[in-house]
Image 1 (cartoon, rainbow, N blue to C red):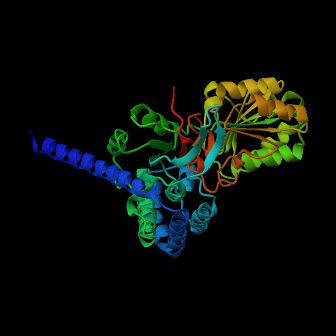
Image 2 (cartoon, rainbow, N blue to C red; image 1 turned 90 degrees about the horizontal axis):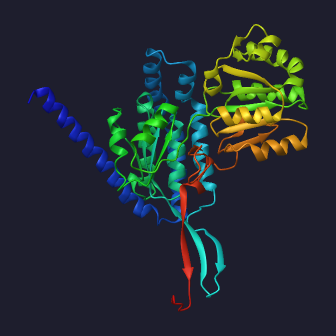
Length: 430
């Protein structure tokens, strides 16, 4: 056997042993963490927030190294934005941890007690999921938000971020683990995998004896890779092909403000709008104005034939554009005949993430709410509000576009499951 072959086998063996050890430590930590009192978890969260704020210069320096590598590889502006960790974003992550600490602890909550004809009292109690694996790409804030939510719900977490954010993730993870130790909780409740090789993910996805659920966050390619290779249940967060439908009755100024905000406020995130649908009776008045505003903000418009007749300077949309999650300053625009056409378009091309209608017609709003079955549906508001923090969940672990066992923005309650609890008085089954 060649030396190269021997070396490769040894490296593979070490990787397998390391990932197995990380998962085993996570399982052991979860057994302790699931029984910890709320005040102990909250104390740890507050210590994490304090550590992140006090060591923000260290985090920014490690993030700078990640950014230099990403820029040298020619990554897009949207990618760089997702990767960047500045003072404001570090402060937001710390504030998010404080807000998680202030949330009601769902663990131990009893739901729906009812008495059966035989006198048994039957209910459900929230318990932690156990060990959660989070696999994500370029957003280092996921390290803090994900770990904080998992801890609050009594779960151990194993974090595997993208190679482009490894230094940032390890820095944040180190600070959080130190805070756990100071709070007398097992430091292995939070672990960051220090390997960039994708084979580390494949090994992690085999360990269903240690890990209870996998949550992937990132592009469609990552989600499909995880789903196709996992032995562990996966909470899928597929792409965010989000739509806004501007109805004929919409207030034009409101519609413009909502559409501009939903596209340009932060184009590289999953709740940014990707397709704008405009009622044909509103199109001639609304489209020239809003397209001009988009173009002033650097947005490339790709429109249907009817849109291009009204605003001839734009690019013509291709069929594949309607399926596209651009995560960039690009927007598809289509003129539709009515609300039924808008809903049909969303059903065909959407990803069950987030849709919005702008209208002053109550019946149209109710029709849109009842017939559009995406995880978040809004009336007269930006798609950017499809976010756990904005919806009062504290931080979020992700936005589930699958329907088992959570759908939409996932907060601390979605990181628990329920068990049946039964109170009897000597009953036996006949």
